[in-house]
Length: 220
Image (cartoon, rainbow, N blue to C red; front, side):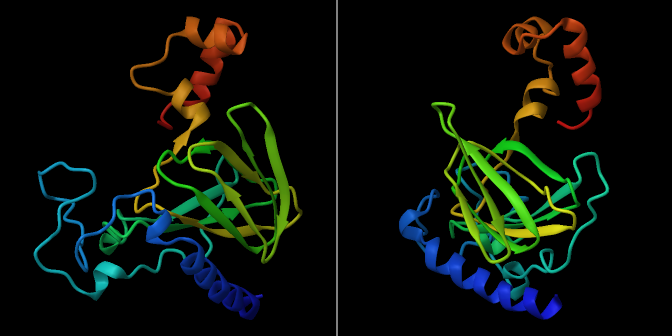
């Protein structure tokens, strides 16, 4: 398993470099060699200001190397490798993430408002899907070594319906793709969305709205 995963990781990097380039980047083009993000700079802009000095560590990250615990309500966890973790990604228009799933684990319906996503399965099997603005469900079961693409801004999800754990690597054409979980956005917003709106939208009772809000409290 370790050797196979290592070989697949090489393929992942090759695929991401070949398919996600500045020519299709969702972010503005860079105007200099590097612009390592200064997260402490008070200047607000579309991206981050460049810090004066940088090192190789600003372009380095080990967070995707190992599986992460999936002992949570959804049975999955997403580990991002974006500009918040790799400051050197600022202005480069790319980022990655690792997704780990327990058996039955769900990466809940969500959107990335700033990026298209390509998902490469490291091991296991996932049911992956997105929903168009015409409410058409586009779904596919993907296995080790296979790729599925999620268009920018569309609601999508993955679930591990297999008997063993699964993991995947995602590539994004944005340094900071963003993520909005649909259920959390609606039922755990601050200040809260009114019960009357949610009750009418989902055709459920106020009691059911409050029950869902209580389960999702603290996840916003």
